[in-house]
Length: 314
Image (tube, rainbow, N blue to C red; front, side, top):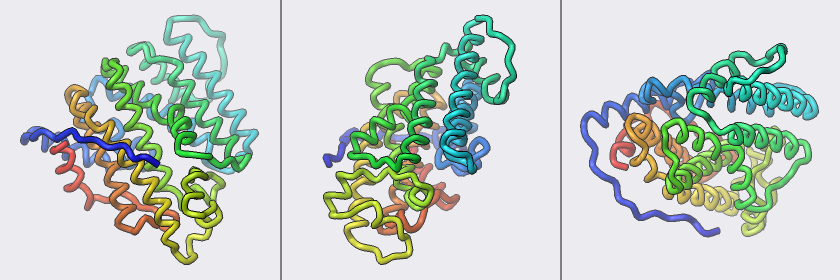
């Protein structure tokens, strides 16, 4: 697997930046919006006028994700709920555009009320919102079918639905639309999704979700079953698989990271913390010898100084 690289050098930072980055870092280790998150979600650093939009997008995606993989519902029930969720999204989009919709009971008013306002205020592209739902539907089907991803390239195809739309929606609300920024946003978001996969191996496999690509396993002579007994003997080949996957995610993140210096104002500083949070997770996985199928790493408050310092010098 070819690892992306980057050669851009960081600029100096000032005291005001330090204060802003520290505030964002505090948000990064908080509870996020109803969930623990590795990265800032509408933190103090987010521009106040955009915070409701960021929260609305997050809550829309987070709720759909929970429908797809939380609780004890059957796959058929999850897909039915996601179909109902997509129907409410369609109604929300029509209402945001000033169109008329027939009265209907709403199951998720706390999601679609704020989202409708965000769509109307920023003309959010509806196809990106629908792409997110397609990703969650795919997750349900693939988990039921015990689908195995053939390659990292196939995983990146999933990221184009599950992660990249979020970055593009946020850039749209910030008024950033150029091709270079969109590409780097996709690189950051795909990297974050991959990092989440390698962080969560010990959680995903017991729940029937597998994102370990077959071609990487084959290069080390391994199968998924080699990672399904977390208390077993650690083999160098297992560590090599996780190290390779983490290395690719790190290179992808480094390619997208310069975007944080071009996104204007507070939003750019928050993005710096997002990037550094992802890179820190990779460092923590490396520090435990890439045994993330045995132990899940997690950001702690002790990571704050490192996150702040590295964000300042991006």
